[in-house]
Length: 313
Image (cartoon, rainbow, N blue to C red):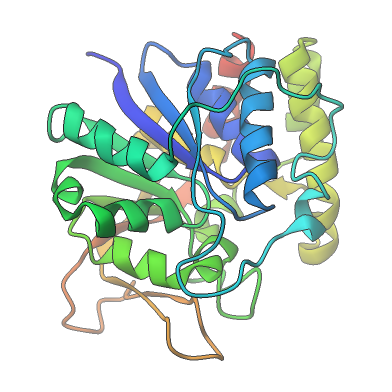
Protein backbone atom coordinates (compact mmCIF):
# COMPACT_ATOMS: atom_id res chain seq x y z
CA UNK A 1 0.00 0.00 0.00
CA UNK A 2 1.44 3.43 -0.91
CA UNK A 3 2.23 5.88 1.84
CA UNK A 4 -0.68 8.12 2.80
CA UNK A 5 -0.22 11.74 1.73
CA UNK A 6 -0.76 14.21 4.56
CA UNK A 7 -0.33 17.87 5.42
CA UNK A 8 0.26 18.64 9.10
CA UNK A 9 -1.22 21.98 10.13
CA UNK A 10 0.23 22.89 13.49
CA UNK A 11 1.06 25.37 16.27
CA UNK A 12 4.00 23.66 18.06
CA UNK A 13 3.70 23.05 21.16
CA UNK A 14 5.54 20.11 22.73
CA UNK A 15 2.81 17.63 21.86
CA UNK A 16 2.66 18.97 18.29
CA UNK A 17 6.39 18.35 18.06
CA UNK A 18 5.94 14.69 19.03
CA UNK A 19 3.15 14.35 16.45
CA UNK A 20 5.48 15.70 13.74
CA UNK A 21 8.31 13.40 14.84
CA UNK A 22 5.99 10.38 14.70
CA UNK A 23 5.06 11.26 11.11
CA UNK A 24 8.68 11.77 10.09
CA UNK A 25 9.59 8.42 11.65
CA UNK A 26 6.98 6.60 9.56
CA UNK A 27 7.89 7.18 5.88
CA UNK A 28 6.56 3.79 4.77
CA UNK A 29 3.05 4.76 5.84
CA UNK A 30 3.11 8.56 5.73
CA UNK A 31 4.17 10.84 2.89
CA UNK A 32 4.41 14.23 4.60
CA UNK A 33 3.81 16.70 1.77
CA UNK A 34 4.48 19.71 3.97
CA UNK A 35 3.89 21.40 7.31
CA UNK A 36 1.76 24.51 7.66
CA UNK A 37 1.91 26.66 10.78
CA UNK A 38 -0.77 28.71 12.47
CA UNK A 39 -0.96 30.99 15.49
CA UNK A 40 -2.25 29.12 18.52
CA UNK A 41 -0.21 27.83 21.44
CA UNK A 42 2.15 30.74 20.75
CA UNK A 43 2.18 33.44 18.05
CA UNK A 44 2.92 32.53 14.43
CA UNK A 45 6.59 33.52 14.43
CA UNK A 46 7.26 31.04 17.21
CA UNK A 47 5.12 28.22 15.82
CA UNK A 48 6.95 28.60 12.50
CA UNK A 49 10.30 28.55 14.31
CA UNK A 50 9.36 25.53 16.38
CA UNK A 51 8.16 23.47 13.41
CA UNK A 52 11.51 23.98 11.69
CA UNK A 53 13.42 23.13 14.87
CA UNK A 54 11.55 19.83 15.08
CA UNK A 55 12.30 18.99 11.44
CA UNK A 56 15.99 19.64 12.04
CA UNK A 57 15.92 17.58 15.25
CA UNK A 58 14.65 14.68 13.11
CA UNK A 59 17.33 15.27 10.49
CA UNK A 60 14.75 16.38 7.94
CA UNK A 61 15.53 19.96 6.89
CA UNK A 62 14.12 19.04 3.47
CA UNK A 63 10.53 19.19 4.76
CA UNK A 64 8.74 22.31 3.53
CA UNK A 65 7.34 24.47 6.34
CA UNK A 66 4.89 27.21 5.34
CA UNK A 67 3.80 30.03 7.65
CA UNK A 68 0.06 30.64 7.70
CA UNK A 69 -2.52 32.76 9.48
CA UNK A 70 -1.32 34.88 12.39
CA UNK A 71 -4.75 35.46 13.98
CA UNK A 72 -8.20 33.89 14.16
CA UNK A 73 -10.91 34.78 11.65
CA UNK A 74 -13.01 37.00 13.93
CA UNK A 75 -11.43 37.38 17.37
CA UNK A 76 -8.14 38.34 18.97
CA UNK A 77 -5.58 35.59 19.40
CA UNK A 78 -5.53 33.63 22.65
CA UNK A 79 -2.27 31.76 23.34
CA UNK A 80 -1.11 29.17 25.87
CA UNK A 81 2.34 30.10 27.13
CA UNK A 82 1.11 29.15 30.60
CA UNK A 83 1.11 25.54 29.37
CA UNK A 84 3.90 25.40 26.77
CA UNK A 85 6.32 28.06 28.04
CA UNK A 86 7.31 31.33 26.49
CA UNK A 87 8.72 29.72 23.31
CA UNK A 88 5.99 27.11 22.98
CA UNK A 89 8.68 24.43 23.01
CA UNK A 90 10.25 24.93 26.42
CA UNK A 91 12.06 21.96 27.91
CA UNK A 92 14.84 20.83 25.56
CA UNK A 93 17.66 23.15 24.57
CA UNK A 94 17.36 22.96 20.80
CA UNK A 95 19.41 25.11 18.41
CA UNK A 96 17.78 27.84 16.39
CA UNK A 97 16.66 26.48 13.01
CA UNK A 98 18.86 27.01 9.98
CA UNK A 99 16.35 25.85 7.38
CA UNK A 100 14.29 28.67 5.86
CA UNK A 101 10.55 28.89 5.70
CA UNK A 102 9.19 27.82 2.34
CA UNK A 103 8.14 30.62 0.01
CA UNK A 104 4.44 31.40 -0.02
CA UNK A 105 1.54 31.33 2.41
CA UNK A 106 0.35 28.15 4.09
CA UNK A 107 -3.20 28.65 2.84
CA UNK A 108 -2.03 28.84 -0.75
CA UNK A 109 0.10 25.72 -0.26
CA UNK A 110 -2.93 23.81 1.05
CA UNK A 111 -5.06 24.96 -1.88
CA UNK A 112 -2.39 24.29 -4.51
CA UNK A 113 -1.59 20.85 -3.09
CA UNK A 114 -5.22 19.77 -2.99
CA UNK A 115 -5.68 20.90 -6.58
CA UNK A 116 -2.43 19.34 -7.81
CA UNK A 117 -2.80 15.93 -6.17
CA UNK A 118 -5.49 13.51 -7.37
CA UNK A 119 -8.82 14.14 -5.64
CA UNK A 120 -9.29 12.07 -2.50
CA UNK A 121 -5.60 11.39 -1.89
CA UNK A 122 -4.56 14.09 0.64
CA UNK A 123 -5.40 13.96 4.35
CA UNK A 124 -5.27 17.17 6.39
CA UNK A 125 -4.01 16.74 9.96
CA UNK A 126 -4.70 19.94 11.94
CA UNK A 127 -3.14 19.97 15.41
CA UNK A 128 -4.09 23.53 16.37
CA UNK A 129 -6.74 26.14 15.62
CA UNK A 130 -8.43 25.53 12.28
CA UNK A 131 -7.80 29.00 10.83
CA UNK A 132 -5.63 27.88 7.91
CA UNK A 133 -7.99 25.10 6.87
CA UNK A 134 -11.11 27.28 7.07
CA UNK A 135 -9.39 30.10 5.18
CA UNK A 136 -8.40 27.68 2.42
CA UNK A 137 -12.00 26.43 2.14
CA UNK A 138 -13.34 29.98 2.02
CA UNK A 139 -10.76 31.16 -0.51
CA UNK A 140 -11.10 28.09 -2.75
CA UNK A 141 -14.44 26.35 -2.13
CA UNK A 142 -13.63 23.64 -4.68
CA UNK A 143 -10.82 22.10 -2.61
CA UNK A 144 -12.93 20.75 0.27
CA UNK A 145 -14.36 18.08 -2.01
CA UNK A 146 -10.82 16.99 -2.92
CA UNK A 147 -9.79 16.19 0.67
CA UNK A 148 -9.47 12.49 1.51
CA UNK A 149 -10.03 13.04 5.23
CA UNK A 150 -9.48 15.59 7.99
CA UNK A 151 -8.08 14.10 11.20
CA UNK A 152 -7.96 16.85 13.79
CA UNK A 153 -7.15 17.26 17.45
CA UNK A 154 -9.75 19.43 19.12
CA UNK A 155 -12.92 19.57 21.10
CA UNK A 156 -14.29 17.55 23.98
CA UNK A 157 -17.55 16.07 25.19
CA UNK A 158 -17.24 14.15 28.45
CA UNK A 159 -14.06 16.06 29.37
CA UNK A 160 -15.75 19.44 28.65
CA UNK A 161 -13.20 22.28 28.47
CA UNK A 162 -9.54 22.92 29.23
CA UNK A 163 -9.38 26.66 28.47
CA UNK A 164 -12.91 27.58 29.59
CA UNK A 165 -15.45 25.43 31.48
CA UNK A 166 -17.03 24.54 28.12
CA UNK A 167 -14.34 24.73 25.44
CA UNK A 168 -11.17 22.93 24.39
CA UNK A 169 -8.29 25.26 23.46
CA UNK A 170 -7.91 24.59 19.71
CA UNK A 171 -11.60 25.10 19.03
CA UNK A 172 -11.90 28.06 21.43
CA UNK A 173 -9.11 30.00 19.73
CA UNK A 174 -11.04 30.10 16.44
CA UNK A 175 -14.56 28.69 16.75
CA UNK A 176 -15.68 30.34 13.53
CA UNK A 177 -12.97 28.46 11.65
CA UNK A 178 -13.98 25.21 13.35
CA UNK A 179 -17.59 25.85 12.36
CA UNK A 180 -16.59 26.26 8.71
CA UNK A 181 -14.63 23.01 8.77
CA UNK A 182 -17.44 21.07 10.47
CA UNK A 183 -19.85 22.25 7.77
CA UNK A 184 -17.44 21.56 4.88
CA UNK A 185 -18.81 18.14 3.97
CA UNK A 186 -15.37 16.58 4.38
CA UNK A 187 -14.84 13.18 5.96
CA UNK A 188 -13.78 14.31 9.46
CA UNK A 189 -12.32 12.41 12.39
CA UNK A 190 -12.08 14.32 15.67
CA UNK A 191 -9.58 13.38 18.37
CA UNK A 192 -10.98 15.17 21.44
CA UNK A 193 -9.80 15.54 25.02
CA UNK A 194 -11.93 12.48 25.79
CA UNK A 195 -9.25 10.45 24.01
CA UNK A 196 -6.10 12.43 24.71
CA UNK A 197 -6.67 12.53 28.46
CA UNK A 198 -6.31 8.73 28.33
CA UNK A 199 -2.93 8.99 26.59
CA UNK A 200 -0.85 9.98 29.63
CA UNK A 201 2.93 10.15 29.67
CA UNK A 202 3.53 8.26 32.89
CA UNK A 203 7.01 8.09 34.41
CA UNK A 204 7.68 4.67 32.88
CA UNK A 205 6.57 5.81 29.44
CA UNK A 206 8.76 8.89 29.60
CA UNK A 207 11.67 6.80 30.86
CA UNK A 208 11.26 4.67 27.74
CA UNK A 209 11.65 7.78 25.54
CA UNK A 210 14.74 8.88 27.46
CA UNK A 211 16.22 5.38 27.35
CA UNK A 212 16.35 5.60 23.55
CA UNK A 213 19.49 7.63 24.19
CA UNK A 214 19.16 9.56 20.92
CA UNK A 215 18.81 13.32 20.57
CA UNK A 216 15.15 12.76 19.61
CA UNK A 217 14.38 10.45 22.51
CA UNK A 218 16.04 12.73 25.05
CA UNK A 219 14.38 15.85 23.62
CA UNK A 220 10.94 14.22 23.72
CA UNK A 221 11.49 13.20 27.35
CA UNK A 222 12.52 16.77 28.18
CA UNK A 223 9.47 18.15 26.39
CA UNK A 224 7.09 15.96 28.32
CA UNK A 225 8.93 16.63 31.58
CA UNK A 226 8.20 20.33 31.05
CA UNK A 227 4.72 19.86 29.65
CA UNK A 228 3.49 17.59 32.43
CA UNK A 229 4.02 20.03 35.28
CA UNK A 230 0.91 22.00 34.23
CA UNK A 231 -1.38 19.04 33.65
CA UNK A 232 -0.37 17.13 36.76
CA UNK A 233 -1.10 20.17 38.89
CA UNK A 234 -4.36 20.98 37.10
CA UNK A 235 -5.85 17.50 36.77
CA UNK A 236 -3.98 15.52 39.42
CA UNK A 237 -3.14 12.99 36.71
CA UNK A 238 -0.21 10.59 36.55
CA UNK A 239 1.33 12.49 33.65
CA UNK A 240 0.71 14.85 30.76
CA UNK A 241 -1.77 13.93 28.03
CA UNK A 242 -0.09 13.67 24.64
CA UNK A 243 -2.86 15.33 22.64
CA UNK A 244 -1.55 15.82 19.12
CA UNK A 245 0.41 12.59 18.57
CA UNK A 246 -2.95 10.83 18.74
CA UNK A 247 -3.73 12.36 15.32
CA UNK A 248 -0.63 10.87 13.70
CA UNK A 249 -1.19 7.62 15.55
CA UNK A 250 -4.75 7.42 14.22
CA UNK A 251 -3.46 7.80 10.67
CA UNK A 252 -1.00 4.96 11.32
CA UNK A 253 -3.09 2.70 13.55
CA UNK A 254 -6.82 3.50 13.54
CA UNK A 255 -7.40 0.15 15.23
CA UNK A 256 -6.05 1.65 18.47
CA UNK A 257 -9.04 4.02 18.64
CA UNK A 258 -12.81 3.77 18.86
CA UNK A 259 -15.63 6.28 18.53
CA UNK A 260 -18.97 7.11 16.94
CA UNK A 261 -20.09 8.78 13.72
CA UNK A 262 -22.25 11.61 15.09
CA UNK A 263 -23.30 15.20 14.58
CA UNK A 264 -20.84 17.79 15.90
CA UNK A 265 -21.63 21.49 15.97
CA UNK A 266 -19.50 24.41 17.22
CA UNK A 267 -20.91 27.14 19.45
CA UNK A 268 -19.88 30.54 18.07
CA UNK A 269 -22.46 32.90 19.58
CA UNK A 270 -22.70 32.43 23.32
CA UNK A 271 -20.13 34.27 25.46
CA UNK A 272 -20.66 31.60 28.13
CA UNK A 273 -19.97 28.55 25.93
CA UNK A 274 -18.11 30.02 22.94
CA UNK A 275 -15.98 27.33 21.30
CA UNK A 276 -17.92 24.47 22.84
CA UNK A 277 -17.96 21.25 20.83
CA UNK A 278 -21.62 20.21 20.87
CA UNK A 279 -21.29 16.50 20.18
CA UNK A 280 -24.53 14.53 19.85
CA UNK A 281 -22.94 11.43 21.37
CA UNK A 282 -26.28 9.95 22.46
CA UNK A 283 -28.13 10.73 19.23
CA UNK A 284 -30.77 12.91 20.86
CA UNK A 285 -31.19 15.28 17.87
CA UNK A 286 -32.20 14.73 14.26
CA UNK A 287 -29.08 16.51 13.01
CA UNK A 288 -27.15 14.51 10.42
CA UNK A 289 -23.82 12.94 11.46
CA UNK A 290 -20.89 14.91 10.09
CA UNK A 291 -17.85 13.56 11.95
CA UNK A 292 -16.38 10.50 13.61
CA UNK A 293 -15.90 11.57 17.22
CA UNK A 294 -13.37 9.34 18.95
CA UNK A 295 -13.95 8.31 22.54
CA UNK A 296 -11.24 5.86 23.53
CA UNK A 297 -7.66 4.79 22.83
CA UNK A 298 -5.61 1.74 23.69
CA UNK A 299 -2.91 3.74 25.47
CA UNK A 300 -0.31 1.00 25.88
CA UNK A 301 -0.46 0.31 22.16
CA UNK A 302 -0.15 4.02 21.41
CA UNK A 303 2.98 4.44 23.51
CA UNK A 304 4.51 1.24 22.16
CA UNK A 305 4.03 2.67 18.66
CA UNK A 306 5.50 6.03 19.68
CA UNK A 307 8.57 4.51 21.31
CA UNK A 308 9.23 2.12 18.44
CA UNK A 309 8.96 4.85 15.81
CA UNK A 310 10.93 7.51 17.68
CA UNK A 311 13.75 4.98 17.99
CA UNK A 312 14.13 5.18 14.21
CA UNK A 313 15.12 8.84 14.26
